[in-house]
Amino acid sequence: MRLRSEQWFQHENAETRFQHLSAMRACGHDPESFAGKAIIGIFNSWNDLNSCNAPHRELVEYVKRGVLMAGGYPVEMHTISTPADFMKPSDLPYRNLMAMDVEETIRSLPIDGVVLLCECDKTTPAQLMAAASCDLPALQLAAGHRASGVFRGKKVNYGTDLWRYFEDYQAGELSREDMNELEACISCTKGGCPVMGTASTMKSMSEMLGMMLPGTSSIPATHVSRQTAAEQTGRRIVGMVRERLTPSDLMTEDAFRNAIKLLAAIGGSTNAALHLTAIAGRLGITIPLEWYEEYSRDIPLLVNLQPSGSGSMDDFYEAGGLAAVIHQLLPELEGSCLTALGTPLAETYREGTKNPQIISGLNEPFKERSGLVVLKGNLSPNGAVLKRSASSLGLDKHRGQAVVFDDYEEMLKQLDSDELQVDEQSVLVLRNYGPIGMGMPEWGSIPIPRKLLQQGVRDMVRISDARMSGTSYGTVILHVSPEAQAGGLLAVVENGDWIEVDVERGTLQLDVPDETIRARLKAWTPAPRRNVRGYLRMFEDHVLQPHEGCDLDFLRPNSKEEAVFVPPVVGRG
Image (cartoon, rainbow, N blue to C red; front, side, top):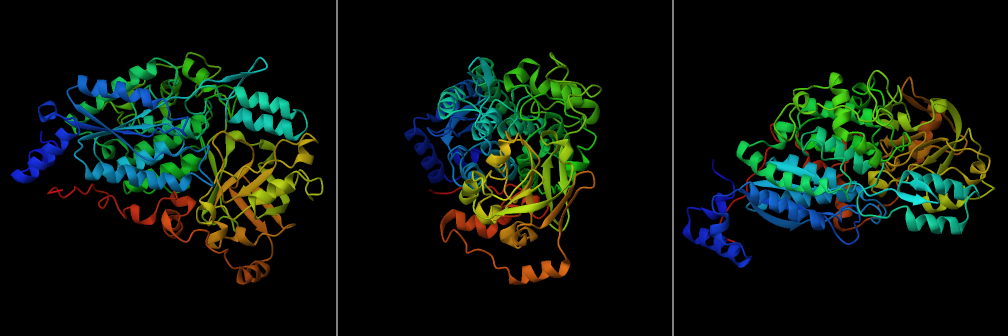
C-alpha cells in the first residue's frame, strides 16, 4: 500500500526529497523513525480559555502511544478552538473557520490519517466537516463531560440547572449571595456540559456516523477509561489507514438517517439540525429540513437526561451510555451501516441498558414524543425548528400577540421591567440575530419576563431566527428561515400582531392581511452590515441559511461527484 506521505518523503526529485527529509529532521523526526509508517496527524483543539477541551492537553499523549503501538508515527498540531462560553456574539461562524483551518492543514501536509480531538459544541462538527471534505481516514476523540457539582446538598449540572436557578433568581426566590455560591460550585472540573446539550449530542452523532470508536462518546472526562479510549483511538486510526476506511465510507445517507433517529431518542440539541446538514453537505449529501421530522416521527425519547429529563451524563454513562441507546434503537436503524471498527452497527452494539430509569426501551420509553418539529408557514417558508421533548405540550397549539425585540441588550432590560406589556399568552419575538444578522448566537431562548416569573410562569412561546443552547428548554421556535436580515417575514412583525403555532400541523403563521404584509415589506430595508472586513465579512457574504446548515456556499460541493479530496502539488518548499 502506497502511503500519501510518500509523495513528500519518497519524491522522485532528489532535491525535493532532500528538503522534506531535512525539514523533518530539524523538527526532531529522524527519517529512520517514520520511514514506511503511516503518519498520523493529531489535531489538538485545547487552549487556556476552552475548559471543555482542556483534557486533551493530557489525552494527546495517550493517542500518540496508541499510534506508536500500532506501528504508525504520530505528529501533533494545533488548530483554532471554539470556546462557546467566551466567543461573542456567537461561536457559530467560527465553526466554519475552524473547519477550514483543519481541512487546509490536512490537505497541505504529509499526513496519512487523522485523529481529531474535540468536545466543545462547535469543535466536533467543525472537525467532521473538515474530515468529510478531505476524506482521509479520520477518527474523533472527545475530551469527555465534566463532573456534576453539588449545591446545598443537591447535585447540579452546568447548563440546564444554571437556567433553572437563574429563573428562580429572577423570580426573587434566590439572592445574589445564593448565585455567588452556585457559581463557585456548578462547574467544578474540566470537560463538556454534563447534560444532553450540544456537546454531548454531537459526540453521540459522531459515534453513530462511525467517526468515533463505539462506546467512547459518553465516557466522563475524569474517568480513567477516557485515557484508554485515547490509546485505542491512536491504535485504530493506523488500522483505518491500512484498510483505507474513509469518512465517505462511514458517513453515508443511511448513516445520517440513523443519526437523525438517534437525535430523537436522546433528546438531542436543536443545533444538530444545523451541524448534520452542514457535515452531509460537504459530502454532497442534501438533508432536507423535513428529514428531521420524517425520520424521528416514530422515535420516542429513550433517555431521561436534562434538559428533557432529570438525569446527568454521569447517570447516562453508568446506565450503559450511548452504546446502550443504540442497542435499544437497533430495530429502527439501518444496521448495516459501519462503525469506526469497520463492523456493522447490528453486530457491534450488543449490550442493553443497565438502568431503565435512565435509558429505556422502545416498548416503554421515557416519553412517547420526541425529535424536532419542523414548522412552516408565511413566517418561516423555509422552515423553523422546535425541540418537542423540551417544550410544554400545552403550548402545542397556541395563538397569541407578538411582543417584538430588535436588540438583545435592550430586550433584557425590558424583560426586567414591570412596565412591559406582556402576559403568559404573548408570543415573544427576537429578530435580526440569524446567521447574516449576527452570526446566529444562542439567544433564541428568550428569558421569561420577570413579572411573569414572579407569577409562576415558566414557559411561553418564543420565536427567533437565532439558536439556543442545547442545554436549554421550553417552547422555543428557532432557526426561522429566511432570517429577518435576509428579508424574511420575521423582519416586519409588529407588536400586537397575532401569531398562530400548530405543532401537530407543523405551521407557523403571522395572522396579518396579505396587503398589510406587502406594504410592510415594501417599506422595509435591511440594517447596515455589521462587519466591513475580515472573516466575519466573508461569513456574512457567503453563509447559507439555517435550513441549509449555515456552511459557506463556496465550501459545499454541488454533488457527490464534486465532493472529492484535491491532493496537494508536492514540490520544492
